[in-house]
Amino acid sequence: MTKLVFNSLIGHLVRILMVVCLFLMLTSRLTFAQKVVAINDKIPHYIFSYGEIEYLEDKTSKLSLSDILKPAVNSEFLVNKKYTPKNYHPGSAYWYKFKIKHSAASEKNWILEFFDQSINNFSLYVPDNQNSYHVYHSGTAYPFRKREYQHKNFIYELKNSSDAELTYYLRIKSPQSITAIIVLRDIRWFVSYALNEYLFFGLFYGMVIVFSLYNLLMFFAVRQMQYLYYVLYNLSIGLYEMSIDGIAFQYLWPDSPLWNEYGIGLALYLSSFFGLMFTLSFLQVKTKAPEFYKLILTIIVLRSLFFVVCIFNTHLFNYKLVEFIPLLAAYVTGIKVLRDGYRPATFFVIGYSFLVAGFLIKILLLLGVSWMPYGPVSYYSLSFCFVFEMILVSFAIGESVRTLKDTLNNELSTLVDERTREVRSKAAIIEKQNEEISSMNARLQKNNRELHVDIEKVTKARVMSYEVDFAEFSKIYPDRETCFKYLSELKWAKGYTCRKCTNTTFLAGFLPYSRRCTKCGYDESVIAYTIFQNSKIPINKAFYMLFLVYSTKGKISSHKLSDILLIRQSTCWAYNSKMQKILEERKKELKNTGEGGWSKLVLDPAAN
Image (cartoon, rainbow, N blue to C red; front, side):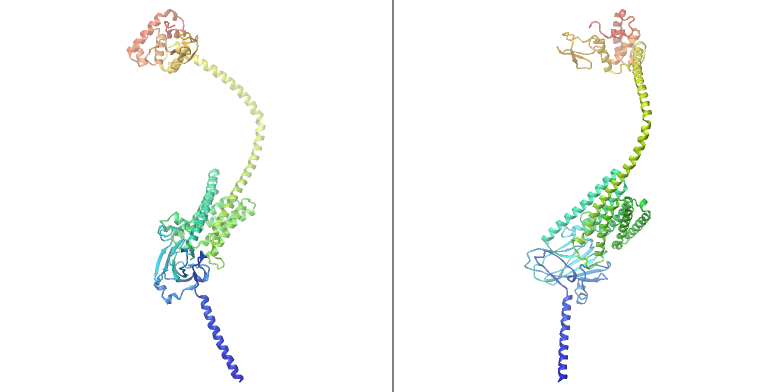
């Protein structure tokens, strides 16, 4: 009896264990079965993660969709155990499988969005209700204008309006390590998010441009290379962010996909190079930390050599972790210089602390750390850190300017004190010398005035007393204005009287030195009632002709006057005859008159 009971209990235990094992197997299979993402109008935004994505690495990169759909190959898909899967081997093609439960009752339009903008080539296989697939190709290997949505991310619009549960396949082949971020979104939510995202980009790149322009102006103002290095560093950071976000492909080289292979690597190299050059210049590393100066120069050379190698092997651009070495070198150098008492290094170190934190977050994301979920904060963490770094380093530059100003002020103050003492010691001597110089200047000015008057008198006397050539005569009467002035002084030497109404007040007339009566308006020219009235030859030549006739006492011939004045002989004969006649008529009056004879010969006696 006891044996039968024991055997019965053993049998029950065995059956219970079998049921438990079967249950555990079933629940285990259900636990690791791929999860299905259902479309729900109440959830406008959903990121596929963990068990919702399965992946398969195709090391040959030759598998097609028909191969993938074969049960033997399809069963090799592995459940994703990280938040978002990655292609850890860029030489392989990666297949991803995910399921969507559509809803015919949904009142919204839905899209699939793929976030990593650096995916070189991906193919999305979209099923329909007849168990056939349609392929949609995109990636940075295709010109930007071929995208259905002109957006930096890759967008596919879901057009299935049934209640079917469909399996989608995604094939990714990229020469660099990328993250397969798959997002299900309501189109309205996507538009709102995209506008906010581009607004953020505008603010970020606007700050890059503003800080760059500010430091460029500072460079032109003070001509210090640290400002130019910082401008180029900021622009390199901006180019890197544009390349990593897909903005550069959208706006800078939309028709040149080849640049996508080099854009990120080039921007990172330039940011490291100019960042280290700025560090050397701004922190004065050569004088304040010579050992770090040699270290940074070595890093610059090695980083440049690595960049040259990357140009010929673009797969090496995937090793972005090398950028942490230049950043860490600049950060440690800043700490060293700060500890040695250089105040401007304070903001530099704080700014680079944010940058180091941002790089650490990016490194954790690149390594696929499971506790680092994808999200806007983690994705744009480095961008936020760049903003903080720009602001703080600008403060550091301002502090360096203040420090430089204080140093210069102290040096200038010392120099001014020394120069002041020297000036005071020489002030008495200088003052005495100034007095002597002033006295000498006064005497020289008086002598110059007297000499100038004497020269004028001598020159005029020479011209009026002796035979001189036309060039020397022209020094006294060079032009019409001078001749008219001389005539006006002769005519109205005793004052003006109108010939029509005897009024004695006048205004300036139409011609130079002519006079117009203020009462009757009669305008009398300066040559009227003189020997030169109605003369048709230049007045200065007429003057010279009269001078020659007067100085030779009428013995000069018309032929000689023609040769001297370059005037026709007949014209010279007429004028010479007229002048000789007046000279003969007034011979007695002109005797022993010297210079006075000139005026007596010029004025027409009949008019007076």
